[in-house]
Length: 189
Image 1 (spheres, helix red, strand yellow):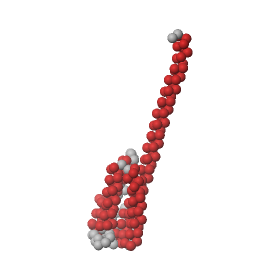
Image 2 (tube, rainbow, N blue to C red):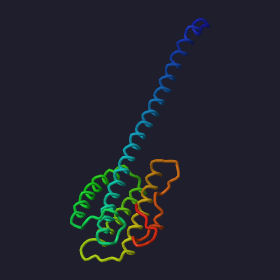
Image 3 (cartoon, one colour):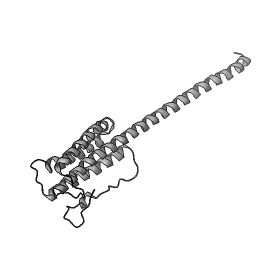
Image 4 (cartoon, helix red, strand yellow):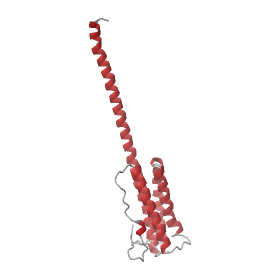
């Protein structure tokens, strides 16, 4: 090949190689942007699912605390009789059940396990402490309430890890210090 032909071909080869490299870099950049967008989208959905779940179980345990107060067991300032409480529990459970499906779809295994534990301990508050022939002592009820509170904190800490929230988790209540209503420093959730 003559030097004049080579001189004519080299710019064309340079343009073709440059075009291929620009296309490849653009494709990689678009793919990375799409992946980030998808990750952000699912993180937002997980945050919503975890928040909705926490709110629904908290509503459930709050209703239990109010029912317990009507029986002289809990610390709630606004007691709720068992009949009205059963309706509130049913609404909270309907909501919890619906949002738990989203947690199952989007959550990581440790957060799902923590959600199940919190739910089980919340149901102990209701089933074993408040309805039917249940007649727990104030201390037994408060022990169950504290256990549900600890499970709540474990769920929130697990959800924060899954969502990669970097700040330290600080529980709103030190559940070991929550005392029975007759105690001098009874705490409320």
